[in-house]
Image 1: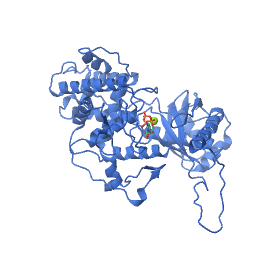
Image 2: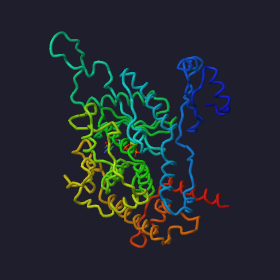
Image 3: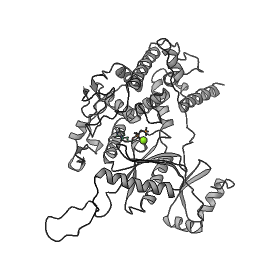
Image 4: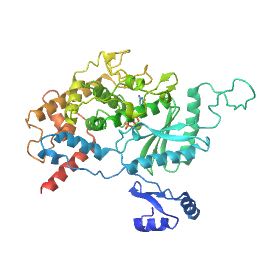
Length: 469
Ligand code: CTP
Ligand code: MG
């Protein structure tokens, strides 16, 4: 949007072309708006009047978090940490606007890919749609060519047939690489607002990575990645089964980010996906279990749910109402404490984490951390993790479990006590400084802090001060 135009004027101008159904404004290298008209014809009418310079897309990367004060739960002794966990989840989860923007970026990219593959679709997967996405998470996209006419035609057994000729290529992988190569080229040359395009074609899962400036999203485009679509659906299902699942995953993700266990830079760190699987495994191990195992979900599947992708059985039930749940009544506080204790003593050196069976299995190969990929069972989700990173994770679980004990035994030392200006409860576990303080009793180590979480905690503290005064 032109910086001299007010929102009101802008909307008035657009409404000359038809009724506006929804809109929102935001800032990312300038002011942007996403506008949805009630009728498609309005867009044609608008476009006829436009010149080419516009790029009016939206971004909520700088979204102001609707935070509630974490410390204000101090007054109700029961479930105070539960409330903090819920606030954190509510503040960080993707907003409806942010989700819509993600689908919009997929559709813009589809317009570029359609130059080569007119009937393709581009779908989001990963944390943008699995229910565990945090504001600012990357946008994983999948180029789906299966809908292209003729591509999946079955050959008739006899009689006349219309044959659809495909050029032969060396392997499925080589095809994926060349498709991504040409699309990467198009995105680089013609993708409005797409910068820093990198073609990472030799990775296990080839991809094109770029930043989409108008939306502020870091994007990863893959092709031929159907198994990841299935694991996205599975994670979504788990998150929907019990409200505690999403809250716990969110909190563990935030905790890990605050202590530099995870990072936005690829490396030997534990990834969010691995952490999520670890939380799910822990919830399967509760007594009674909070969520079923993947084998149980497979056994509940109906004929329409059957799915085999590249020889991997990806079948699981899609009808949520068929899934029986146990009556576990543990609070979020108990579960978070339990998570830290569980992984403080887990036999990582011998055992593999397996959500298919819901039981640890002997490690099939040497790796510091072994988490079986739920669908491609011969793969280790956390193959990248080295021994140092795993040790840091275990040490932080131990320290956080210790801090929890202090909260529960009512020894407020280092936990804020009754002084409302110091972080308390969940905040004390997320704050790098506090954990570092505890650590100095043992050995001193430098922990990189997440600026985002630090500032979140600062704003929580400040809000509390304002309230008090
Ligand atoms: N995935 C997988 N195996 C891996 C890594 C990723 O199957 N070793 C799939 C998962 O479905 C995952 C998706 O690819 O959700 C996207 O991966 P990634 O972006 O690393 O994880 P997200 O879940 O999207 O989490 P983040 O918010 O950190 O992006
Ligand atoms: Mg992702």
